[in-house]
Every structure is written in structure tokens, then in C-alpha cells.
Image (cartoon, rainbow, N blue to C red):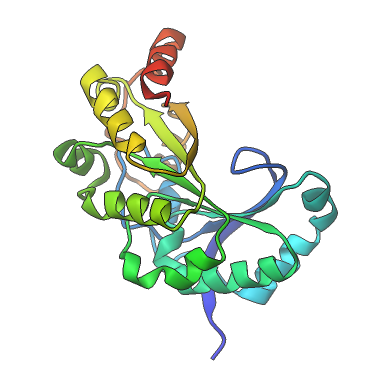
Length: 237
């Protein structure tokens, strides 16, 4: 039986989700409930449109010259792509047959015993660390972070390069002690190549409003340039 995945949308010329020009696949469905989520419309696992892996690759092929010229690749994000790990694995296998670089943008919230096949075809993991503290992570994302820490360690042990992404939210993720603990956790990982501090923004609020949902961080200001600089200095390894 042909595996199908539920996809929200595609982006043809992504430049922020891995090296080079990326063909970005936004998967539908997410188990996290992040307070600052800017893709609120991707939470519903029954939304989006069904595609086969071959159909995704056919979409990517339209831009293959740009991808190859820039040493880019395909990035699968979401939502949470690990919810559809078997499907993403099929997409990546086809991409690797074309010698295309593969990347997953993920929260890491998944059972690692179900990811072996996928990670064998994964060249890069973009790992979004929400918070290192378990209780604060639960407050922000609605789930604990034990699975995420295990995933990060597992990926590192597999020798797969990791790029860390950390969203800096005033009052939630900018505490200096928490940043130091985050750095200590990152230092335990052997394959981290890059750490990116992403300043909080409210550009996705309209999606919450469109869905009739209350945005709980209303009034939260974006971090200052000094706040961002300080966080980068602390997290630097």
C-alpha cells in the first residue's frame, strides 16, 4: 500500500531552513501547543492535503536546478514532521536517490524507536529547543521535554549534524540561568554545528484569530537587540 502524508503547503525557495536553497515541505499536525506558535493552522492532523512521496518529489523537481546549484536540498518541517515519520522517510529515500541533501525541522517530540529508518536518510536535524526546564517547557508547549532530550541525544549519537534553534521570548525563555542550563545541555551533544537565536514575534497572531482562538501572549514585546546579543553570547559553544 502506498504511504500518503498530510501536507499543509510547500515553499519553493527557502533560505532559512538548512544550507543553500531549500524546497520546504510543511507537514500537517503537531502534538505540541506552543503559546507563541506562528503556524497555528498546522496543529490539526486531519487538515491539509494528502500526497504520496513521489508527488512531493515531483514538486521538488521543478526547482532541482536551483537546489543543486546552491548545494541546497529538501527540508521537511511543520507542524511536526516526526508525527508522519514513515512518510517522511519515503520522501527522503527518494531524495537521496537524486543525491539531494535532506533536513528535518523538528521539536524532537517523538519515540526514538520509530525513527531509525528516517534518520538513516537524514543529513541534518534542525532542532527547536523550547525550554530546558521540564515544568517551564510544559507551560510553553503543553508537553514535557523528556522525549525531546532523548531524541537530541539519540541524533547526536547517530553522528547526524544538528542545528539548534531557540526562540527568545521575553518573560518565558530569556532567563539567564535557564539560558546557561540550555547551553550545558547543548554541550552534551556531540554534533551541534550551529546555534540560532530566533527573536519572538507576533506575526502569526492573525492565524489564531482566523481560527477563533485566543492568543495567550498578547502584549508580549519582541526582545531587544541587546537581549538577543546576550542570549547568543550565553548559548555560544
